Figure 1 (cartoon, rainbow, N blue to C red):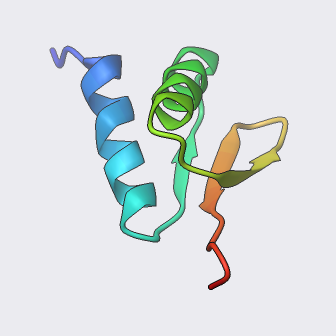
Figure 2: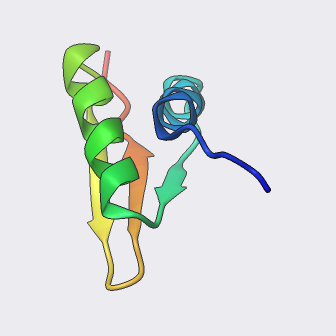
Length: 63
């Protein structure tokens, strides 16, 4: 039986986003944790919310 640590999973997803890649989350709990982490680190994303889950797509800052 696997034990899934949602906090660790959220941090991994945020690391993906930080590297410029999109991340997907199905559960409301995981989506909430990712949003909190993104807000704390002031990372801007576009959220594509569907009935099945949420995509977090990084927003590039124009220079």
